Image 1: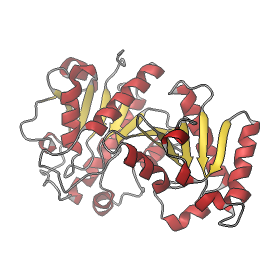
Image 2 (image 1 turned 90 degrees about the horizontal axis):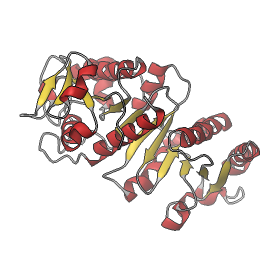
Image 3 (image 1 turned 30 degrees about the vertical axis):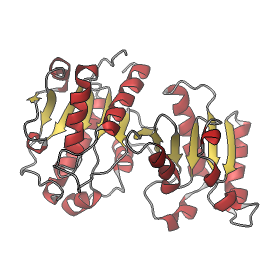
Image 4 (image 1 turned 135 degrees about the vertical axis):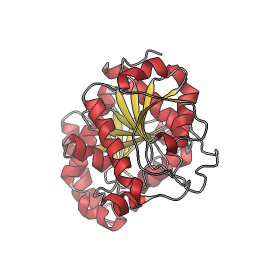
Amino acid sequence: MTQPAKPIVISCGEPAGIGPEVAYKAWHALRGDCPVAWIGDPQHLPQGATIQVIDSIDQAGDVCATALPVLARNFGTTATAGTPDPTHAKGVIAAIAEGVDVVTQGAASALCTAPIHKAALIDGADFAYPGHTEYLAALADVDRVVMMLACDQLRVVPATIHIPLAQVPTQLTAAALTDTILITHAAMRRDFGIMQPRIAVAGLNPHAGEDGKMGDEERDMITPVLNALRHEGLNLTGPLPADTMFHPGARAKYDVAICMYHDQALIPIKTLDFASGLNVTLGLPFLRTSPDHGTAFDIAGQDKADPTSMIAALQMARELAVGRNV
């Protein structure tokens, strides 16, 4: 496959988790097929890792076939696998911000982020964001971004993300749902090459509200939003009962599904392909992907972490970068 002109930058994520391990394993699997550079403290990478410290990301292409290129940053202390250290929080956050900088400045083609541990970031640096997605939106100075989870069998987008379930009905506004659908529609056209994307939209309530008998949101808000967007030419179906949207026959009828809240979207994709699912952030002015898993402290440091999702995230970043010619 054609390669992007510039490497993909990987932010280190939580040093005590599996992020450094899966980043190194993913580099080893892809080698020169997908040039990357890792930002973080080299002492947090697996013991015995073949690395080469570089001064700038433009050196990564020459190094990547034989060693993991590392933009070395000193976090001060080693990491204890499985036990997050809040003193690393500022370094973790800075690695994300630096990754955004090198992409927005044109030195890298995309950013791939390893998983973070939000509690450690809050304890160590008063991190003010629910997760990566919201922090990246703030760094990019955009009002709204969309989290897409993808695997070979399914693409799915939650309209609300990292909020308590009790807050979903109040935060799921007509404006927010409209933005989510429009951002998703534009991304399907630009990045996935589907000029007339078929978008399925889930209801919020059981049976998609069943004509108001099990909830009013579908009748009062979701359906009017979909009708308005249909008038603009979007190919939308719904609101649909979420419990019948994800079997093979249903999935064949759409290119991407919009769900109303986090677990409604993530449960089906993690069930279909737990290992290979990945995250793409839509609506940013740069490309960002990530593996669709967490820090996995229970297996960190044991050489048990599966790099499949990180590999998929890097491959997706590569494909999207080639498509955008960045």
